[in-house]
Length: 256
Image (cartoon, rainbow, N blue to C red; front, side, top):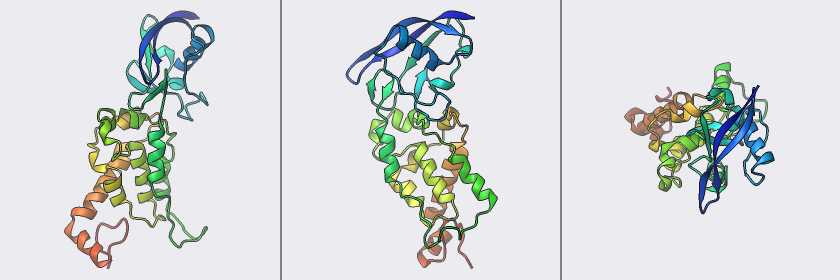
C-alpha cells in the first residue's frame, strides 16, 4: 500500500536557504530516510544528506523532523498521518554546510581535548573489575555519536558563545565514564568543571529524551559527576583530606 505524502525539506547552504515543498510516494514500512533517498532519485538529485548504515548505529543521519531531533533512518513514516506535512530540517546547533548536512567538527574538537584513559602503572591483564563497574561504564559505551544530545542542549543551542567553554552532554558523559572507571588513575572532576563547563548543565534531561540508544545521560552521568565535583570542592573534610594526600580518586571521605 502506498500513498502520496507532503514533505517540506530545508534546502540551502551556510549563506541562505528555505523550506521547499515536495510530494513524494511513501510505501508501507518505510522510514524518513527512504523518502529522502526517493526525493534524490526522482525530484532533487542535488539534495545533500549524510547517512551510512541505515540501521540506527552510525549516527550519521541526524536531523530534525517536525522540530524534533531524530535519526532519519529510525523515524518511521507510520508515526505520521497520511495527510500530515513532514518537515525535515538540519540539526540547528551546528553550522549548515548544505541542505541537511551540518558541520559537526565542534564535537570532534571537544573529543580531542579530553585526556585519554590513564591506567597508571597497571599492566595489561593485571587489573580486575567488579561486574557492577563494568555495567556502569558499558551503558555510556552504547553512544553512537549522533550528537543529538549536543544538538538539543540549550546551553549551546541557544548560546553560541558558550561553545568554547562547554563540551556538551556527549563529552561530559565521556568524562564521567572515565572518572567512574576504577582502573583510570586520573581525577577528572576539575577537568569536567573547569575545562568542559559541567556547571553550565542545569539537568533539564532534554539530552536523555532524544538519545536513540536510551542512555540515561542525565541521571547516570551528569548528575553523579556533579555530585563528585561538589563533594571534592565544597566538602571541608574531603578538601582537607585532598590537601593532606589521604583522599584518593573517587573517595568522598579520607581513607584510614
